[in-house]
Amino acid sequence: MAANYATVGYTTTLSGTSVTIIPGETRDTVTDAAIIATFASNWTATAPVAGAGNITGVLAGYLAAYPRCTVS
Image (cartoon, rainbow, N blue to C red; front, side):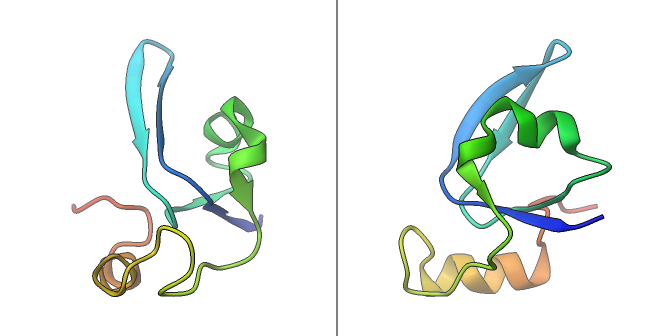
């Protein structure tokens, strides 16, 4: 199992459910293989850095607390 990070944000439908991905969000290659496969070129194994691309300092702080972009 390896972590993957979204390089861009996008929305897709998977098994009839809308899935929204934001830049920097983490998914793993085992549990979330179907999500990663929808747009495989939008994922990387390199962790995002604040200030690079679409990752603002505020978003980086949010991702540190909620890497999967879910609050449970």
